[in-house]
Length: 114
Image (cartoon, rainbow, N blue to C red; front, top):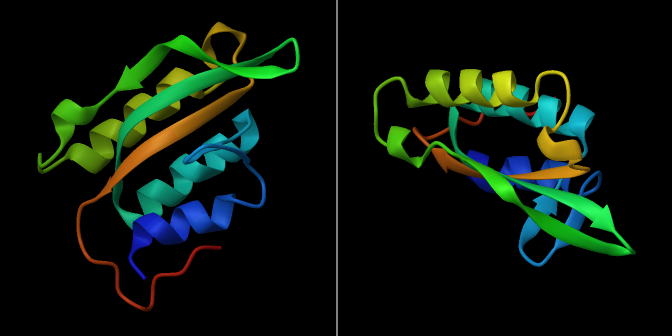
């Protein structure tokens, strides 16, 4: 199994499923970013959600790092930008965030998620 499905599998138990999205609360999102860095996954985008009258609503704001795809330092740049964006809290009083990631290299069997 490659790193991308492994990381999403790890976070399914702490996230909220919304269609194909795995929505994470702030502390889990920070750990997700750490795992992306460890596994050399580029973060291509982030979408934000909030609870409104019993429904989960996607906010208009999002983060798009897809222009980094394929660049040599894409992992470092996307990880740094994602951390800066949600370091203290999620934007616009969001309750959850979802991620789009891209694997930049094959992951060996020795690399495991904590």
